[in-house]
Length: 459
Image 1: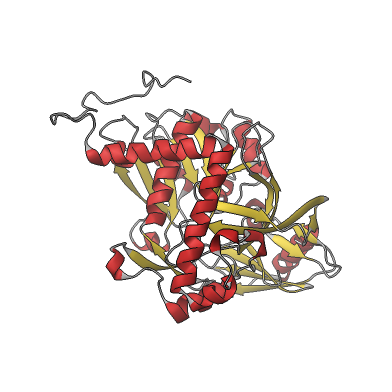
Image 2: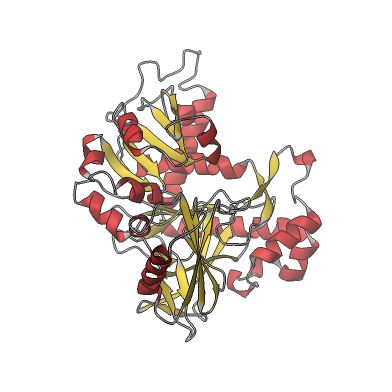
């Protein structure tokens, strides 16, 4: 092993001007944390698992002391003797009940900033809970660490999309643009980076959006796959290559095999992450094995319950439980995040750490059948827009044999359009489903910022 920073694009004034100081304290702390996380996740596995066990014991001790809810779940056993798998599974409703009844488990005297937070509601059951300042800080550091761990070029630009309904009132083209001259956070004064462009959008004009993307090289493209699917209806995948896309980084939902193939065909790799609003980063997709996610062991412990197997599309998967090691404000211990997956002790690439694959759930819509089967249900936006003009749509499995479809931005649908939507849904779901289609002026999405095209309300 050799420490060599000759290829790291340090700025000309990367080092401190103060006497007897190498790097100023703020950047030095951030850089040290990046190195710590990389060492923890790629270093000695025994040392890593020992660290996780101690962090788990710290969390359990804190929860048992501060919360009657957790004291009852943990019992009177000695904390050091508790096996994680012997604790009960934690549900969304239980999280909400604990947070509502007991509030934040960190007191103001501890001088750790906390705030009330909530999930986006993509699972159909928004959950309110408390987070400490550690959560956003960890996610910021861990995101930068991934670039170092993969050896990515920090001088490339970063282009990030964010859906924002209010944009429609302030922009005729359906999007706004904000730019910063770097995206490396607290180490931007030490290491050169490309610009950071954030695009907030809602029903964007695709031609105008493409013009904007061509103004600056895209670099790392962080975007919701649904927007990419919409854009690919009007433009060729080669556009993204010409506009300088280095890596597609889908967020908030799973990227479809069709989008992945479209980008791969023009030489753009796809690198997704696995996360949830409640616990933050869970894993990052392997460079060498698409669909395999190296678990972010510096943040979570992941279990897949082996005694509740679900066979999905011929694969044996189980329910995913996540323990967030830094969740001191509202503990998430053996939390059921609503996904099913496969857990391997090591990644096929050789990474000596747990890896999650075959992930299905909120990110990839699942359909429950009357005979107990679970199948993937994915209707592309292109298929929907080919049948009629509309602003938005939503499909929900409301019962074991019922799917309700809402078509937004329409006062009514013709009988032919209604029949076409029913035929399309049955094509993907099966003839056993009773499909209803309703035109609405605007879909009531509630408080959710996510707008999933499909959600099962029976899983």
